[in-house]
Image 1 (tube, rainbow, N blue to C red):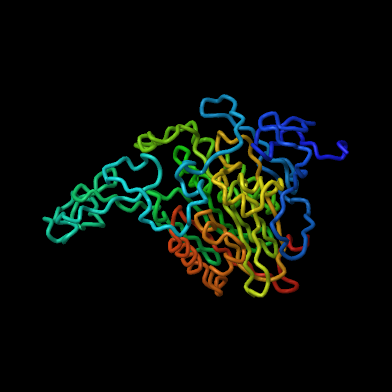
Image 2 (spheres, rainbow, N blue to C red; image 1 turned 135 degrees about the horizontal axis):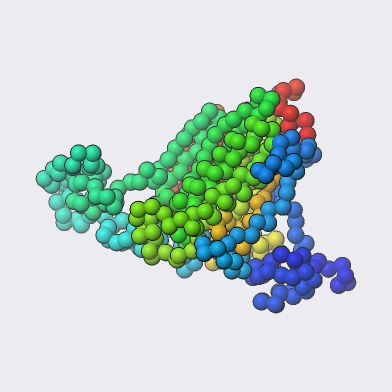
Length: 470
């Protein structure tokens, strides 16, 4: 009966085309989708439950406005564009050029040869259209034959010597004045290990720069027990300054967690506030044209607001909290591999919407060229901000893998991720993160690759923090 059919609430979107809907709509005015056949919206939930369900205590701290903090509050925060005007009602954004980016074209084989990527002259603009491989030196040149054949160039005081020819001076644009090679940027490959958490980020084999970022940290809860944090962000390649967006988001989320967790804010509420803070940090970039040549580097990009995705994990006692917006993911891999691994996040993507609406199988949805169109992101032009949070009490020890799609494209299923990570991941998180990045690079490295590995130890009986008694 029609009265028993699901009718979307105001503010929801069509599962067929993502257009905004009004309360009581039975059909989408844009594409005609039968909304009565769509399943009712589901609350934030993990792909698979891990251990016992959690009954949440009231948060003991306050939110960012000084009010008592609920366990979780709605995250509907409308934004404005860079000029202060209302945002367009667009709920889908491609993370890369739809016609060519591997992220928006899943039909392209992840194992395709890197040689298939178009090459560009080293003199081309570094942002002339997205991703490319720098051309190798002319085989007939003296540099390619024998770098020692080039007269050594003594760089000015404080200057850099080219890593390719070991002779030329590197100019202010980051290119060798002798052989034309682009020099590695500081963010091309980053590694950090902090106690029991580690992260690695790599530019990959196709992108000209690394647009991912991460933050790992630890702090103490009011009872003195540790809380460990891992944040991973993926810049939206089709946006302006995606590398700045991911860096700002990761830093803001990490700082907010380090501020609120020691005050006693419940970890799930703290994660929600951290995502809001990350969103505000990315939004602020829309009004900031950047420094130096930032805008020049983006002259060939669409002049839209900086944007990124985010996923984070907090381990506090026996409590594991995950938060995310976009299609970056978190996985659970138990130390005892006889137990099942699990994916802990649900993508904000076109493919996930199609599967949730029952319109396609997972295999069909992810084979479609629209699969990687993201429907949630951080940025001033996002339709709305909807932070997702999920909480778990694992019943056994394991590791949490927090990563961008540059990794999970090569280990999509939870079982695939479990097979890809070393068995001693809990004891060697940095090595494990390095192995996972290597797995993606060996598979083709079509995208930037970032992963954080966070070991999670189930406290012994009688030990743990106040949050364990939920």
